[in-house]
Structures are given as structure tokens and as C-alpha cells.
Image (cartoon, rainbow over all chains, first blue to last red; front, side, top):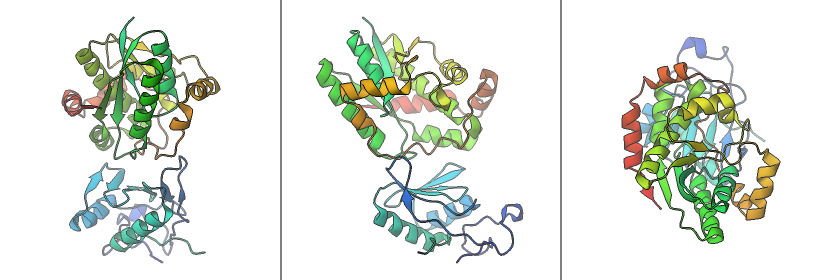
Length: 118
Length: 208
């Protein structure tokens, strides 16, 4: 499980006032259909402050196009993913397996927390 | 009868509003503000299907302008107060619609808004949003409640299209302002180049 440290390639914020309490860990709740049924969302179990600028740099460094809207990033993966500053991810597909694949890829690149088990 | 430009979102209301305009014998030009990448393809697909149905029903051509709006959303999100983002967004939509109305010789703008349904449709926000244009705005559904609109949508066959799954607009802030004042909005707009944004959107618009 990832611990927010603000170091290395992590996408967590490195501003101390935004960091969660020492030792706190996050998981993403299970992937689920969003309210309008057109996408799959991953919601952290709390406000997960992400350093979007750092994530953007990491992804662009891999040659992945990213729209930077300041409070969210829109990442041109297949499917497209929206990453909000509070940690919510939205995969623009209703296909659970495709969303999970994109989640796993993204998590490997920017060290996001894991999905809850079970 | 007059010619008007109608904003179409893919939702339940706008095809019902067009239905009333067409039924009264008006000509309609449809405009869809394309919010991708803040949405998926579904709003556009719904609008295309709505119009196919309405063209067939009323035997009218109903041209559709697809206006790119995603880059405008990005600029607004980066440069302006998120709290009033929906009002600012609407003001840019109206401006593009008015430009297209000028091009199309239309004398009014129209929308499926009904009073108080969502944050962007409070009287305060409607007034602030529409202060960005000069043409009169027609709202055939203004006094309808949701059940009434849905009943008509089912009757004319557009409801099942509108309610297909889709990704809702990601640019909507968590707590959008339900009240806004024009002075505040104009101050926010000073942070961006309004004319350039609208010029760019209308220039890149395509007719489907």
C-alpha cells in the first residue's frame, strides 16, 4: 500500500500542509459505474490530495497527452481518464475491465494507492 | 414565423423545447457546444439522434452546428473562479450561439431551460448568463416542471435517447454558485480574452 511521502515519482502532494496525518494510507474503493452510467469511477477513501503538476510531468514525460485544467487532468489513455485534485479518477468507458487495465497502468506510472481488496 | 438558434445538450429538455418551436412553425438551427474532453461522445451522439427524430417528425432540415467548447472550459477552469464556472460557461455558449444566429439570419436564441431545475437555471444565473448577448432568448419550457417535460419527451420519442448512459460534464464544480452578479462575472472575464475565445470556437465550428 502506498504511503504519501511526496518523494520520488509519487503523485501525492509534497506540500506539508496538504499531507494527510503521518502514517495515513489510502486505498481506492472498488471501481464502480458513475451516476450517469457512462463511465467507471475510482474514489479514494477520503480526500487524497494529489500533486497534479507532478502527475502531469510524469505522464507527459512518457509521451502521454494531458489536458491540464488546473483542478483536474484529462489523460489520453484508452480509455480517457480524468484525475481530479481530490483523487477521484473517472474512466470514460462503461467497461469495467478496460477501466481496471487503465487504472493499473496509471497506478504504475504515478504511484497511486491500490484498490481496496476483496 | 421566425428563425431561431437552439442550444442542444443531449439532455431531456432541449429536444422538447425544439418540439414546441417547430410545432408553432418556427425554423430552428441547432447548436451543440462540444464539451469533450470534459464529457465523452455521448452528448453529441444523443443530439444527432434527437435531430434525426425531429427532422423526420416535422420534415424540417434543422442544421446542426458542432462548436468546440472543451478548450474554452480548460481556459475558464485555469483562469477563473471555479465557483461561477457554470455561469461563465453559459455566457460563452450564448456568445457562440449568437454569432451563429447572425450567420444564419436567425432573430432569436432558444434553450430548454426551466426555472430552478439546476444551478445554472436559477433566475439569478440565467439573467447573468444571458447578459452576454443581445438577441432575445426564448425558453419554451420555462414554467414546466421535470415531470411535465419528461412526459412530452416520452410522447415525442426523445426520452429514451436522452437517458442513455453517458459521462456527465466534468467541468461542473462540486458546489456551483446558484446566485451570481454581473459585476463579479465581468471581473472574472477580464482574466481571459473573450473575443478571441469566441472567434476561435465559431471559426472551428462544423455543420453536421
